[in-house]
Length: 214
Image (cartoon, rainbow, N blue to C red; front, side, top):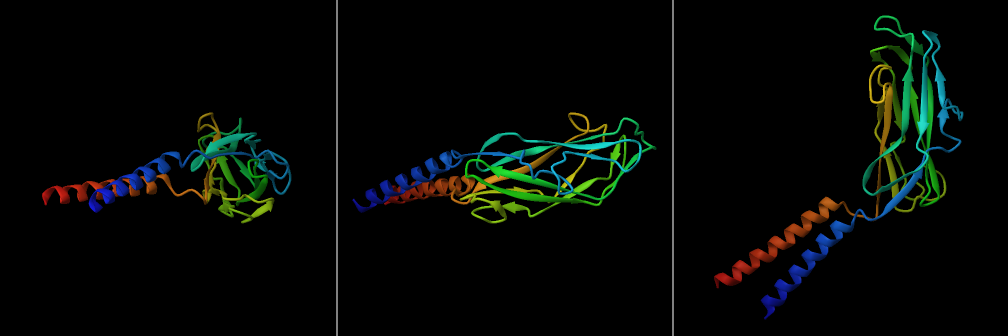
């Protein structure tokens, strides 16, 4: 009788783990990067002009409203590099610049800023030497790197470097998508929960075989 109860308990626990893993991504977060603090060199300007060579521009189109489950990769906006007069041998130069990417978590009424720094560089029609390094790499949970409000259990992370593609590269042409990641500190990773559930089911089957062999 005790063995039967043990098997029932193991099976119920395993089922609970598997069900939790399946529902772990049910939470959704709505966010946007259209805040006034998003822009080049500490301003709200979304266009940067080249400083020498052929006329070139680097523009940013923010994400007006994104909704994503957690955990998930997300799009924070897009840079577009354009240079109509650039060729493989004649290029354009951008001076060093910074770019503030303000992300607003509208679900939790909080915001924070990823600050990007670039040493600038020279671009050609088929090559671009422009990279943006970001800090911090995580905003939230709670008030961690928050400019206002409280992110609660939600946190956003940003890959360390964004490499701007050449004017004639990418889809659409000249486009570089700014990728990030959103998750919640209250939700265990679904993969981890799934593995735990499988382990519990395996334990139950092993115990059943042991009892059958007696």
